[in-house]
Image (cartoon, rainbow, N blue to C red; front, side):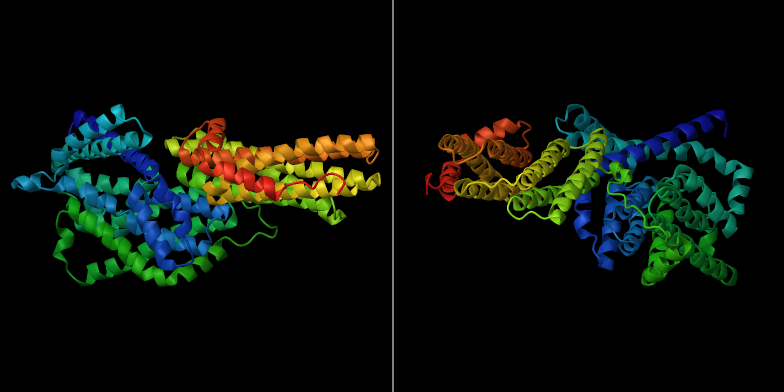
Length: 585
């Protein structure tokens, strides 16, 4: 093996790692909806958690990425430590699919249809299809599909290049002696752990081992301990991701490490005892690509079978190694680790936005209540909710801006942009709740009482405001298109009510039934209530835009008024429902 073989090996390794990285990232983006659905499946059901972890890892081809995602979930409070353990076990089994895919390069047969299964036969076709999708595809989904195929073709080409480059090593005595050394199980485990920790991917290190096996110098006796060590080395990614996280997130990383270390120790002890007591000819045979894939799968499945019933013990061990802090921890509401998986980060942002919306609507409803039933405790709760809404807007706004810098599908990008708009509207609604509260406090401090007719009119417009709030919240939380369409009709009624009530106030002033001071407060009340309905209209418009994948808010609202056959009926319904009594009654 000369210097040119070494250069070829380095180039093949670079292409292999690059192709695996590109394919994994593209698979994550392409499987966005599947990853988003993970939030609804991660329940206390242990088997479901295991299957979810296995499925997601098989989809994105990376147990490290799944584990980092799980650490982010736990850090954000989306998942408990107990749920995380099941997912981690599933991820360890799911990652073995990569070795089976890579084993295709070891196919050797003179039969034509079998030769077609070799990557050298079909990857050029996949690469051609991939570059066509990437260059000529009009949507991000097609481009991501192209990148998946290109990434796969690149990693398989790198695999072939590495195999060809190391073929000369079979005649190098030092290489033979190296893998004879690795037949010592402890040294083999250390070698696998160090290599995997360096490249932070057990799938990649298994691929490298498969490439080296093409020399014929890697026996099963040396390969099996290396495979065991690879499972320990892959934990480094989760451990690094838990730095600065909550106690439970750190415990999740500890569980991942403990699971792999304990599983490796148990299997290593069994392997060593069996090897020394029983002569197994297979251990001296040269490992094949498919044989390594079988050993990788068997090891992870055996570890899972042994430790799956011991999940609660792993949880207790993690809690013992990472004890509770004396002071309560601050839970991370939006974990930046999730940004690596935009679909999941977007779903988490939407979940927190729903919480923010509930707080803002609660504050506004309480402020309307304070107009007639003011209490200091109610006033304090309104101001606390307004502060909390401001906090949510700050962290959500920053998080969504960071998320927008990541590559997302067109629908995800549109949803992120609309969420940015809507959290601004909900924040303004909470501001108006404080404005209404201040008007209520001014009425009390100045001992101003509204006339009976004004009080009745205020009840009408505040009830309409409560309903438009309820409709807009339902539209946002449940993606209720019907509720969103109804908001526009009711918002028009509230606009009309505001103008009518202002005119009636002027008449009361002229008749001496109202004071100037009361008039100023009356004007503030009407302005705030009408602006709340405007923000509700904006929120409903965004819901309609997301459903129609249209970014033009005003065009969506105009379409509702022009083209919706129900709009006129809804308008008439609300006009009748919130009709004002004649003045003087």
